[in-house]
Amino acid sequence: MISSLLLSCLLAASAPLLVSTEGLQGLVNMCIVDGRNSADFAAGHIPGAVHLDADTLSEIRDGIHGLLKPLDQLHQIVGDAGINPEKHVVIYSDMADPEKRVKATRVFWVLQYMGFTRLSLLDGGIGKWKAEGRALDAGTVQAPKAVLSGLVPRTELLADREEVKTMLR
Image (cartoon, rainbow, N blue to C red; front, top):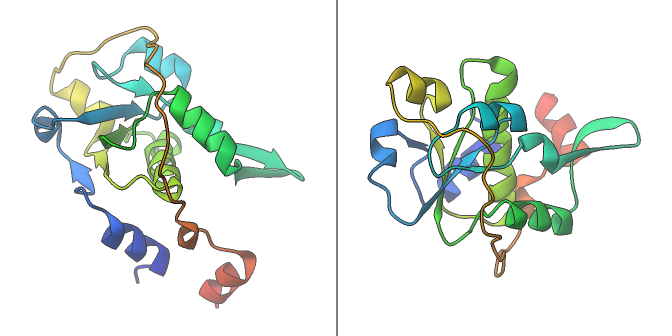
C-alpha cells in the first residue's frame, strides 16, 4: 500500500522521479547535489556537483534525533550550498549502503517540503556512476550562494503524531 505522503510526493513532482546517469548529461539548467558526508564528497564526486550533507538538515531537540531544522535555517543551509530552486535539482548518494542511501531521499524530501518543484534522484547514485567508469572530481567545491525566494513550504508533507498513529492502526 502506498502511503498518502509518498503518493503526494510522486504526484506533485514536475520532473521525473529518477534520472539515469546517461540522462543526467542531457539535462540543461540543472544542479547536481551530493547528499553524502564531507569526507565521501571530497574523496570523489560527480563533476559539477555541490555538496549538501543530509545530516545538516536535521537536529536533536528534547533528546529526539532527526528532527527537521526550522525553515529559516533550512533556507540558509540550502542557499549557502548553492542549490537554486529555479534549476532542475538532481540528488544522489551512495545507494549501495543502506545507511547512506537515505541521504539522497532525505535531501529530496526536505527540498520538496521547502517548495522546490523540479527534483529528481540519480538512479543508482554514485555507485552506478563509478561502475560505468565516469569521471569524478575530488576535493571541496565552493558553489555560489543561491537566493531562495518565492518558495512556498509544502506543510502537507509533514505528519504530526496523530496522523502517524492513525496510519499505524
